[in-house]
Length: 413
Ligand code: SAJ
Image (cartoon, rainbow, N blue to C red; front, side):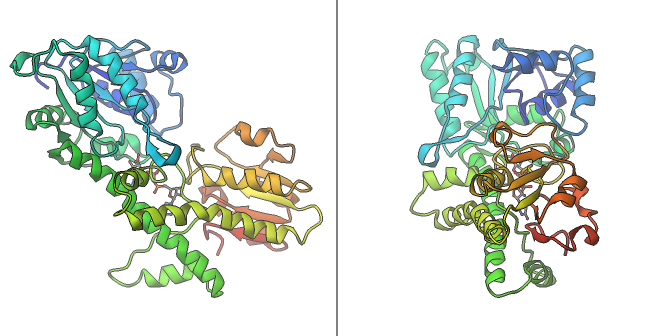
């Protein structure tokens, strides 16, 4: 990219760190910025603070070559990529405070001519608000003077955890500029590593594209989850039902489960609902259907456990989806927490091969222990499958034969 010397990536989490790494690997001078000094120290040593395939290999190379460094202080740079969390607050209203904190550190460093790219998933209008905030704090930068113009764009990340280093390169990207020039400048940056198509639009449309993608998935998962409730009432196997319906050339139903977890699909649809509460009826209802699913699983287990004096439960899986270690907003964690409270006479053996310690919300409960798969299966009356980790697929039918089995992912049919 012409004239780019340094890129500062603000926020070294699940998206910021891979993005900083891939930019550095492709020849940019990248400075990663994070408020957490432990994260900064880890990155400078070439250590990845979370599990993501291939990231460490790329990162060690970038750090060793001197193209990637990390710091807690926002530096001067030519491009700023902002990848900070955008959670919601009370009443599902989006919380932009992390974006504002990031741009408040950037604004005093600007000399004019920089490009600010918001990558965080954001409600419609967030990039415009970010630009207004920066320019309001720097009235000295004359925006009618070509050399002093600051450019703003939104380029939402769309990578799948567990495949981030592949999808960063191969996925198409949407770039929305506050101006056409901003979009073109951002496109140049992404062209340094992205082999997918880079499609240009305005910032507001780019924000909505990302929210719509995740809402589309949420609505479709809600359909599958609703079918699981209907099928149970009608004494039909929901997995067979979906498999057979999916033989139709224009039907592709997703899979039910214990609920929808993670930090994206369970959050982003609310940004649309809060922006347009009267219109987004289906999107809101789908969130409600998915949010109600863990309670349905809990009721199912307690109803069966009540038949036992001291129910012993094997809870298989805590992560929010298969074959990762990420417990954020995982329905499985919420289910085990509730069961531990409701079945105080019983015991829950949790099996999660991807973690070494239980999260504090579970470790503080005296009737919950992290266990091996074999021990949990042997000791339990009820086997509750919560995550379709590969490690659980091979459990033989002889292990399940004399047990009450509740398989929320349908892997043992
Ligand atoms: N799930 C089901 N049934 C399914 C599929 C998923 O219950 O058929 C559940 C999963 O178990 C999990 C949740 O949904 O709890 C979300 O998992 P996911 O694999 O659908 O998505 P995420 O959250 O890991 O990543 C999504 C992706 N978005 C889309 O596929 C549209 C990813 O591309 C985005 O980059 C990411 O959100 C993000 O960061 O926004």
